[in-house]
Amino acid sequence: MKIPYRDLSIKNLILRKELLQAVNRVLSHGRIILGPEVRQFEKQLMQFCQKKYAIGVNSGTDALYLALRSLNIGPGDEVITTPLSWIATVNAIAVCGATPVFVDISEDLNINVDLIEAAITPKTKVILPVHFTGKLCNILRIMEIAAKHDIFVVEDSAQSFGAHINGAMAGSFGHINCFSMNPMKVLCSYGESGAVVTDDEHLYQKIMSLRYAGTVNKENCYYPSLNDRIDTIQAAMILVNLKYLTKKIELRRKIAKFYTQALKDVVICPEEDDSSHVYYSYTIIAEKRDELKEYLCSKGIETKIQHPILMPYHTAYRHLSKFSIPVAESLVNKILCVPNEENLTFKQANYVVNCIKEFYGAC
Ligand SMILES: Cc1ncc(COP(=O)(O)O)c(C=O)c1O
Image: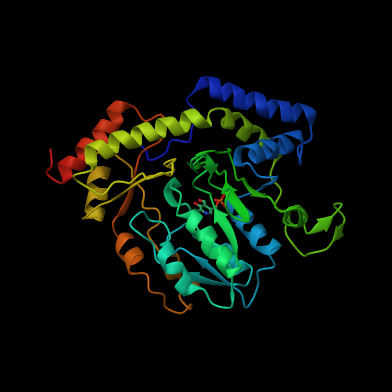
């Protein structure tokens, strides 16, 4: 049996038809740049996240960059974040000229909130937590810490669209909240795209301006910036996917439940608490991870390590001062994402389980 980690081709013919119709509509009305679907997408996002403002942008990376720029984050400022994320998280901080400060993670792979206050200095301007793997970090506690120290929170919700705590959505807690809708994401487009949401009108106006070369009324440049607009075609396709989001998350949660029940005595499985996990990835913590990965590959099962290099250890960040991140250093050698997309069949999921058990001699 061959099981890819993610198959991005569209097999569902109804969905494919709806996506093509959405593209066709854009090609017909011709408002290719910031067409009506962009505003529609932004409005639906506002409703979904219960926020006053939403701005479609052309990637999750740009969403983070624009969020930090709108807060005037720059040289001399410190931004607290996790060491375990896609490198875009720290790149956004560094490209603004600020200094990233890495706080260790817990076993749930999210930033350890108990360690945040010790990392706050007079230079700290922002806490930038990531809801890693699609599981909410302890964002309520982070908001309390931020309020106490009068600093901003920019949520990196790139992996967690649809996750919530009692109905309060990932991306609705921070002062500014950033999403990626790239094709790997739970709510996805078919190219690069992302979004920012906020309740703050001033920040909204500033991000709107920064999104298009820092201009006001599309002409006069107030703040040097880049072109970060979302394509109308991508917005139109996300709108189609939004209709199927609940079902998609439900299916992913079902697969996760099956995996956890079958594997909990063999490897460490993602734990659910009162927050809802959308399983952007189903990431296990496994002893002999590299051998397991190789074994699964020999059985036709593709897996991923997200991410094999902790952000402070990328070449670009080795000059930063040393951080105490022992948990991240240990877990980065044990994490493994197994196939969990919504159209995985029960037979395939069962095969993955049996191969993992076989590897550990637990059949
Ligand atoms: C946690 C996290 N932050 C930021 C990003 C960047 O998003 P994009 O790829 O849309 O630029 C990603 C994308 O994988 C991500 O996983």
